[in-house]
Structures are given as structure tokens and as C-alpha cells.
Image 1 (tube, rainbow over the protein chains, first blue to last red):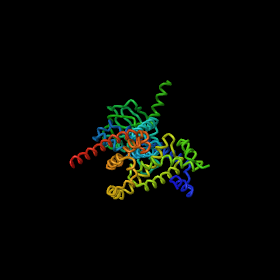
Image 2: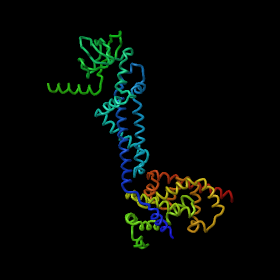
Image 3: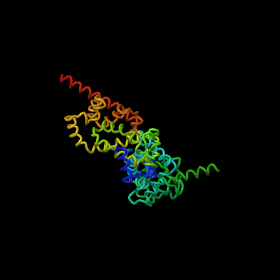
Image 4: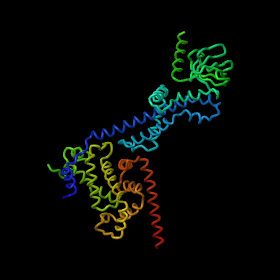
Length: 245
Length: 193
């Protein structure tokens, strides 16, 4: 008996059947789906990192005597950086084991995956998805503190010259003000620089640099908007009202 | 109807594959077409005995049969088949590596022309294979595929599942390593003289 006969006999005798086509299609589809999910989560992680950078206020907080890196690290949620790395590596793995993945060099695969994560992540960030997602994530997970909360902590530090909260009342040369811990303050704004985006009116959330006089009085040096989605909405509304008038 | 050699010869690889799925008898055509080539390839990359090579081939063709529906038609069928045989050979070779060393020593001490099918083909090939065996696995496989199997970069890339650019670099390095061994051999020969 020749070798080809032996082979055919074995196949027939052991009733060996080819795996159905759908198994291969399913395998390939799962790999591509995994790839896209990994790229997407990587992109979201990148957008949250961008959001963290945006919220760091490097220039404003430089008087605190910390380096920019220190400030960034204090606000950056490392979980997102780790997720970005893990999901980029995961997407590399998924695409490499797809049918034609081996055609790309490792450097090309990294460039494609990192590029996609950066591109989608930037679009997600510009669209406001990063702050929404990060906040929703913080609300649903007990262990995670949102960037906003971290930012509030940094700005809730009157002894170091940082204060943030909501304007209660505007008077000549001073503000009645409530910080995020509901402490009431009188803010002297006589010699303060007020950023263009700030409207000194009741309900406005602002951040202030300056120095503390006592537990209820603060002299403002610079006043900036708190930032974030709410501020953007207000700005848009004001612009529309202006154009309408 | 029995599948004769004439019928096999009239069909392309892809036609045989699609007919095999309907009637397993056609699968013998693929075996007959590639048996000698693949057996030679197994010898070249592994130094396995003829019997072992036959076993590898049988196992590889069973794997091919099981995975026949997963064949990606954008690559050459021969590349797909070589990939399966290559992987089967290499995994067995790695398993038997320590055993292989012992066998190789025996092979060189007890060379028997009848037992070594390569001897019948070309004595120069034997010398080349000895040098190839001194190279690392990743260099040996690209050199065998490129220069002994006469495959192009795309085929080698599809067999080894490595990008074509990496294949080019690896061949280049393998050639240098091969030349170095030849050089060293010559030095040894000159010293002996």
C-alpha cells in the first residue's frame, strides 16, 4: 500500500472530517472584533489622558513650587495609562494572529495601532466624551477618583494660595464665595487679574490664586474659569445671546 | 470512479482542494504531487530519517485535511501546505532536539549511502546541508526555502508567517553566517594541510 493510500485509508477509517468553514470565519471575526475593541478602549484611555493634561493647569499652579511633571503625575489617573499600554499590546496580539497579520512588521503594527488610538482618542476628547466617560467611570467604580475630584483637591488649598468654588454674590471690589467644602469666603478682587472667560456673576464656578488672610478672607491675584463642560455651555449661551442682541 | 494519476495531473491545486471536500479520494492527488518535494524539504531542515519524514508528512496531511476550509486563497496553496509541514517538522524537531544530537553523531559515524536519500541526489547538497545544520534554526529555514526550494520572498513570508522585510534581512544575515562557516572551514582545512 502506497503512502497516499495509507493517508486516504486513515481519513476514512477514523472518519476525520474537515473543520467547517464557519469556525475559521468565526475565529477571524473574533480576532478583528477583539482588535477593534482593544483599539477603542486604548483610544478612550488616550482621550482621558488628554483630558487629564488639559485639567492640570500647569501655568497656574507653577507658584506651588512643584515641577510640571509632579503636577501632571498628581492628577493623571495611572489606571488609564496602564489601560492604554495593555490595550495597545492586546490589539497588537489580535491583529498579529489574524489571517494576514504577519505581513506587517512589529514597528508598523505599533505605529498603526498607536496612531489609531491617538486619532480616535483625540476625536473623542474634542467631542467631550473623555470627561463624560471618566466621570461616569468614577461614579460606577468605588476605587477610582475622578480627575475633577483630584482637581478639586488641588484647588481646595487656601493655605497654598489656591481656592475654587461658586460665586454667591458680587459686590464692589469683593465676592461672596463658597468653596467646594461649603466654606464661605470673602474674596478681595481689587487688584486681581480676571481672565476674559470669567463672568463675575452669581453661580459662576471659578478658581482663584492669591493668598489667605484668615479662615474666611482671601485676596485674589488671578481669577480663572473652573473649566469643563458646564463652562463651555455657558460660554456658548453667552455668545449666542450676544449675537442675538 | 477511481482517481487516477492522469486525472490528478489535469487538475490545479485549487481544483483538487475543492473536489477533495466533495470526495476525499481526490486528496491523494495533493499527496502524490507534493510527497517527494516535501520529504526532501523535511530532510533539509531537520535531518529526520525517511521513516520519520513519512510520519511527519502523514500527520501534516491529516492537519491539512482538517484545516482545508481555512485555506486563505489569497496565498499560494503550496505555501499553505509548506507552512503546515514546516510547523509540524519544527515542533517535532524541537521536541527531539536532545535526541537528535545523539542521532546526528551516529549519522556521521555510520554514514551508509543506502540509508541516506540525499546522497543519491547530490553529494554537494550533503556538504551544504552539513553547513546549514551548523546555523541557527531561523537562518537555516530561510536559506533552505530561498536557495534549495527556490521560493520567492512572498512565499517564504507566507510559510514562516514573517513579514517580507524581515525575510530579506534574515536571508542577508544567514548568508553572512553561512559564508563565515565556509571561511572557518577553509581555515581549518588549510591548517590541516
